[in-house]
Image (cartoon, rainbow, N blue to C red; front, top):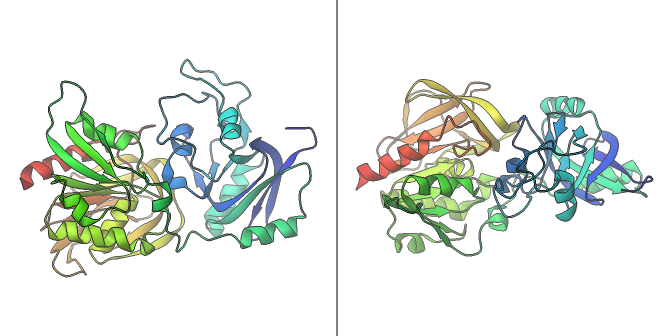
Length: 378
């Protein structure tokens, strides 16, 4: 960064914030969202669910512990842009290998710092998430022109993005040495995080991760004990292929577990609609009630869409033939559906991230629940 370079964050409603470049110098556009996590920024940055999103961190100090080689949730930083208040000048942690700023530059991620992120988050909580752009350099176009560029960018509603972040080739995660194989799961990668198959493998599950474009026949040929649908980016209302595949898996009565985007796909397969949340849930401190146990979990979230299903009682799945369904988990902040459970089929899903590599780990029992469902279905 040179002394003449500056940065500006422009919202599609015309408001803008001037600051300093953080990371690569250039320009980027995307949907602007905020994450309330106090830590875990490396897991956030490398989560494929943030594809095409500009992420604002509500915690003021970011980058204090640097970047390491162990906490990546995918092979690269996935966010479209990054917004922080005060980036760390010097990282300090025994696991740190390089600074966050260095990684942002190396991977071409355009960011901005030294802006009032509190004011920005208040805007997003009031007006809702919207399109935005980060522009930096020593010669920036007039703000009015930058606003027009933002308004010309593609909105998140109607965007099919899972194929862009999915693995191009299948691969297998085996249980650790000495751990007997207890089940075989086919995991449909809609933007899967690395810790998810790792936690299943630790429970003795052999996990075959397959592309988002996989067909039902390709899944059935592998004779899985269960099928997992992962988290991922985009609008579930346009993920018709994945919905059709999941419906066929349900009809075959193979156990199904979906998280986040996968839970939305399960909801659609059962016949429920999905809708866009005003500003979404993102962070690692969201309270959720598990109605099965009556316990409140503090959970990790990253979703801007949700399933529209009745909160109370059992209902027949709107798509015929799948029996009864109930909402199994509810967000205690806003009553958003956070989980679905099929009562006549071995299938369930949650709207949050039980792998939660950055913590908290309250919800990791769901992988044990999936294993128990598969064992019961045999």
